[in-house]
Every structure is written in structure tokens, then in C-alpha cells.
Image (cartoon, rainbow, N blue to C red; front, side):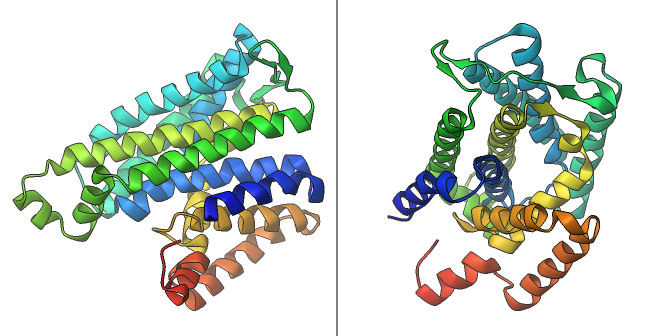
Length: 301
């Protein structure tokens, strides 16, 4: 019922709000949900998830602009590139835990940032601009916002359903067991490192799916997508909405994007407002907005 209500709201949303803004919210909501899969259910805090979001954005933009591939194929190429990078970086990072794990992910993400700054195909500080939206399967023109909105909605819902299935599968139950009591999981014979690497790769792939879709929406891939501040923003979205909840990251992304969009006129003061909102949420809603609501309703959200 909650999924149906969310889909119904998103079908009506472009008639009530700016469609590009709603598509941006969906892209970042999927990004935050992918990060929440790693942090909320896997118990691993990454400070470098912008690497997978940004890499997919660059790959998708380059494939669509230079190779002229189908938009769906471009999105899949970006997703696969992020999954491959996540598997490599995850194999390195999971060797440590806690703050050491977080610092390793940040350092690896910075390598991606400087590579994107210097690589010839990324356009350096200018990024890849004028990315064509193309034609879906060679039939449907995605240039109008209305048609592209349908594709973004399908990608977002499919990504969210995939996360839901992962979390509510035996694999997801083992992840929770590892998060709650790693020693007990080891004593039961579970290969903890393999589970961590698997969820890290899945989270990277879904983050890449969000980044590739975002590149088509804005027809741009830039250094902002791989900057360390992007990794910090997705942490804020997850914590504001509710870590370890299914719909919390979506609410957090909506709040975060709404602040940036509607308070753009005040310039750099937006970051001050965002910081104040984060402090209030941490002090008043330690479980996040959705987490508090779920506790009061007595059911998971």
C-alpha cells in the first residue's frame, strides 16, 4: 500500500510541481536509498559514495554523447561501471572497520575525483555538457520532460523495489545479523566479508543507476557528482529521513532538495539552513523523520 501510494503521488507530482525538480528528487532519493542499504542494513559508513554516483554519470553521458547509444543502454553502462568499481573498492575497504573503513572509502573516492579532473574524456572542470536524451528503444523521444519523467519514474520504482527485495530476503536477514552481532554471525558459519562485499557492490551499482539517470535528466556530468561534498549530502539525506527505514531516504532527499530549490535565492546561506535543519533533526528526531513515525505507528516504514 505504501509503494502504491508513493507511485500514485509521483504520477500526480509533475502536474503540481516542476517536473525536472521531481525527477531530481527521485534520482537523489534512489541514491540515498542505495547508501542506506549499506549503512542502515549493512552497518557500514562510507564517505565515498559520490565515486559511484559520479562515475556512472560520466560513463552514461560519454556513451550517450560520443557513441550515440540508446539511453537505456547508456544507463546500464554507467550502472555496470559503478558496480565494477564498487567491487574493487569494496574488496579493499572491507578489510577495515569503523572509522578506518570510512576513511579508506573517502580516500578512494578522492582518487576518482582527481582522475575525473584530469581524464581527457570527462571534460575536466567543464564536465560533459549537452548530453542528448536520445530516443527510448529508437521509438520514444525523451527530449520532452514529460516522456523522460516516465523513464525516471520506472527507474526509481524499480530501484526501490530491488532494495526492498534485498532487505527482505535471507541475504538481508544475514546482513542485519552481521550488523547487530558480527561475532555471533561468524560463530554460525557465515562468511562476513563476502556478505559485506556483496552489499557494498549492490549499493555502488544502485548509486550508479541514480547517477546515470541524473546525467540524462540534466544533460550534464560534472565534477560536482564526484566531489566529497556529494558523499556528505547523501549521509545527511539518509539521517534526516531515517537510517534503516525503507522510505526514510526518500523523505530525506525530498527535504534536502526542497531546501536547495526553494531557498536558492539566499545563495550560500542555504548550507547554513541545511546545517540547522540537520542539527534539529538529530536532536529532535534521532531516528529520522520516518523512523520516529514508524515507532509511533508501531510498524516498519
